[in-house]
Amino acid sequence: MAKKEKPLGAGHSSFDLIDSPALFKELRLKKGSSFLDIACGPGAYILAASEFIGPAGNLYGVDLWDEAIAALRREAAARGIKNLITKIADVGKKIPLPDRAVDAALMATVLHDLVEEGKETKALRETARVLKPGGLFAVVEFKKIDAPTGPPRQVRLNPREVGDLVAPFGFSKARFRDLGPDVYLMVFRRR
Image 1 (cartoon, rainbow, N blue to C red):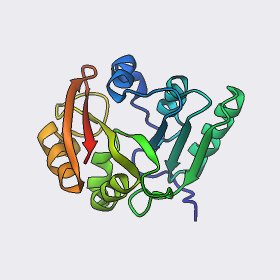
Image 2: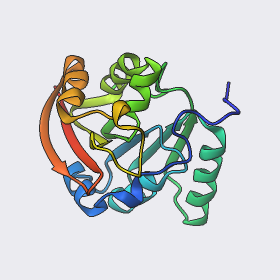
Image 3: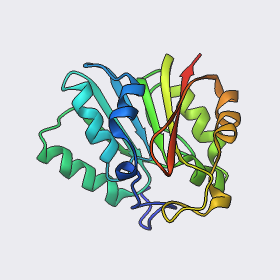
């Protein structure tokens, strides 16, 4: 059942804070590949990813907030994107996709919210389940600094904390990259 109220962090996109060309270079998206945006909100990241994947690939957007999914569907239709599949779901419970369905997955400034809600274990287990072996999992998080954007410092995760959370679910760290003054990227490979 769709949640009517905004989930924690809803409506705040980090897309304008990042070096998006650097992010998509690290994700190595190719024409015809499949991409999942976990807790996608209104879809700034997935809409940008559509340009790399093209019409032959699959774009999956999952979010708990039904209004954001509706906005994403409208924007995708306006842009003529026909290969977008959206689901309203709590990623802290289940990602409604088959096993090994995607080549790459993104969790952009969401992991700290999942940790705060105690849902990170299930969300990371589900992410591992839906990624193909060798698939890439990108985590964008706020630097653990005092800054005017993003959550309070005590909620933020440093790269070591992100690695410690993700590794037990069958991921090896592939790369780290600074994406701007407030955010960083960690890319993991599914074993």
